[in-house]
Amino acid sequence: MLTFEDVIRITKPRFTQTSCSQCGGEFGPGDSGYSHCDRHIADAAKEMLAALRLHQAWHDSEQAGPDYGTQSRDTHPDGERIWRRWWDNQLDLCERATEATRAAIAKATGAA
Ligand SMILES: [Zn+2]
Image 1 (tube, rainbow, N blue to C red):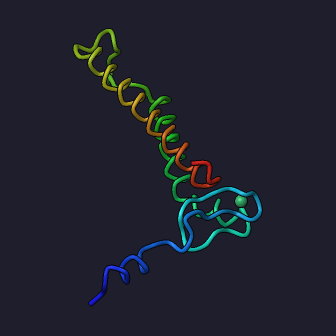
Image 2: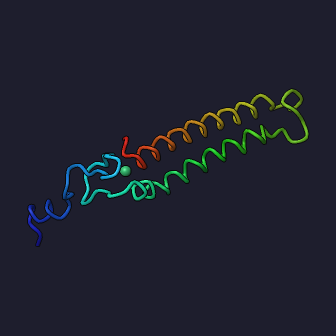
């Protein structure tokens, strides 16, 4: 059976602060730092891709605009509601894309 000290030793990171030897960026607690920037930038690739996908989704919806079918905002009986739902979705996508971008940059650069 593990003792409390065993659990602490196993789960506690080796260093309270890790950094990159090339740029000096700090990356929080961990068992090892980075020798070169390309490694910590590569570690953020998944977050960068997620942020780019959100930006693309926002852009695609911006280009498509609200869907009124064969009608327009003025002629569709639910025109205002359709527009409002599209607009609220655009604001949400933009905010999520911006937050994802900030998180990806922070992870890539250690500037959390
Ligand atoms: Zn670096």
